[in-house]
Image (cartoon, rainbow, N blue to C red; front, side, top):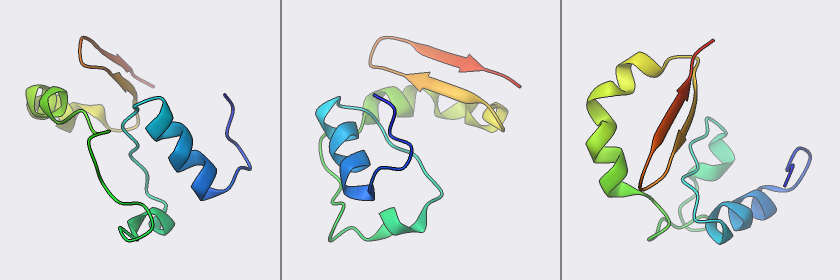
Length: 73
């Protein structure tokens, strides 16, 4: 679902409903009282690929519990 122009609350809800990891530089999401972390993060998958993260600058990354896709510019 395209979320351009939607409220932060709607974007957060969509990420949680779809069990997606949300990484953003939007500081509005830094309020953990409003956007509390939880089991939606794919911690195991992130830890497994953490050594590769340095190579992801300016990339589009899709990470699931079974695969990783990195599209480079």
